[in-house]
Length: 186
Image (cartoon, rainbow, N blue to C red; front, side):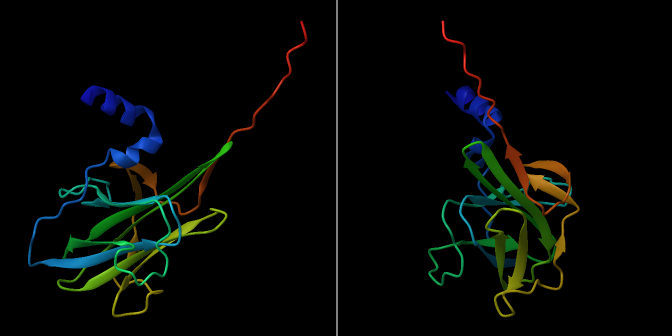
């Protein structure tokens, strides 16, 4: 059974959302808090040890969302996690939706240096037509629309524990055209 699940994860890209190791940080006094929210459904957030996409030692999957989390004060919406402070923390957001004859994907990887005891929020924004996406990492004490001073875009795009090369915040669209042909009557 375990081998069948592994094969399914390797064959079906959408299933990869369930195959990443869940982020479970060790308790430490040198940590900060990060709340993850976005303006859309169907996205997940992952953690990496560095910009070369080395999976985080405490696990990769920070959060998986299947509904909007935008501008909601309810603490049950969004996800709050403890993250290590004092060194760069790399996170990647990945959006995907599947439609008839079209899949739309948008991904972005960013990094910032959290300070001990501080509270942060990452807001993942995907344009309604999925033409682009972006991320803001703000201090909860500062402007929610302004990145923290240590914020930078990762030099590589990290997805599902792999390095996908230089970061691009433009969406990827996979369109398939159905070429229907009628068979002659027999």
